[in-house]
Image (tube, rainbow, N blue to C red; front, side, top):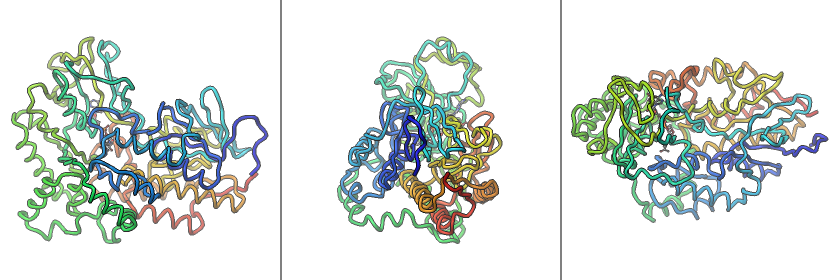
Length: 542
Ligand code: N01
């Protein structure tokens, strides 16, 4: 491949992000023989698992084998997870081990925030702006994270607050102690629900400011017994096959086939017995072991909601607090949450709950949070307010494609893309876990591997055919947008305001941004590649 005559450093591929996805992309593309460099703004590798170091942060799917890379039998067999749901420090250690084992660090430049990327049609190259340096690449892989642009709501007066403000997704590097402190927490999604019980164990007082109540199911985290890990290792091939095999075509929802039983074939007593059993066992099994109708049928979903509301009333001593904790959305249409004692935390003397729907925040004061009922004095404010999810980190990068068009212009109305991997007008720029992929509703490390493999095959195809640029057509994007929407419309997901639909960010366009195909999605993108990349346009190499 001819390199441009320039003294600017040049790579075949640049990977933006050194988290779970970016590190795998670096490894895989490097193994193909490409020159690759990865950049990350953080002082350490790990992405999400570096930034989200708040108390209580842990994986909520089973770590072994679901949360980990699957491509290396050796890695699977040598890494010993200690709990069923690994803590954030353990995941970070695993990622350190991965980086060391595959000698990734020599090609990762940390503390380097990528400020922008601009495509030059004449040279078929991207210029990537690192602030004090520019680098060139033929391919750019955006592994910028689906949940990495923190949502920091512009609360009036926040700069007047004399205490410390922390965000769960941007946790400070110095150790944080809540000992003896009055802590305010805004946000009751996965992060808030993991953090609140832990903070309450340390703090003098915790005031939770809740905008929307949430359903959560016991995590039932426990040490992994060696026999469980041994069983996974011994049957690894079959386990992995299970992870990538799509459910039968008649499944109501490919991403979640359910337990194979129809709720309508069982009596109300049988259904309640199942809910009780799933609650007792806890884990995300409450969703995946439930009836196939859970996420598609309002009647069954309402029954599950009523069951969970009954649990809240059982656990929370004060009936008034219990009523404030009653969610009003369809269960599972916001990301399912697992907890370790969340509802019971409200029985503690040092925890109080403010329902922002009836008592909204007016402003921050020097000493605390002013809601319409009065001032709540605090020393520390924890924002567990989530992320500008799925599209936010791509928009923060805001690459400039053909004809000087910026991504935020292309994505003003909708996050147009094809296969969730590429955007028309942005040749040779690939996304991992972008809008339109199953990303956040699949196994993220495995999804990153499979998306990277698709990207790598596309690069290989281009090289073998003497092509210098690839991008999707606008028509192909249109049909993909429709497919994503059509799949979502078969479910209850679009009926709820959530970060899946962009509703958590003021002014963001509302579109359900996740492809609900689960493993079938990966078969689909493979078939598109095998059949000659329908929907893509290739340009000869200059
Ligand atoms: O963020 P969220 P998160 N005023 O968006 C509230 C993954 N994750 O960081 O629901 C007041 O879910 C907001 O209220 P509402 C997982 O995929 C995984 O908790 O929009 N409140 C909500 O209560 C997860 O889903 C793990 O009305 C405001 C909360 O803040 C995703 O990350 C652990 C507000 C935000 O909840 C995001 O989770 C943690 C405002 N202005 C996270 N703005 C694992 O266990 C927002 N809120 C693997």
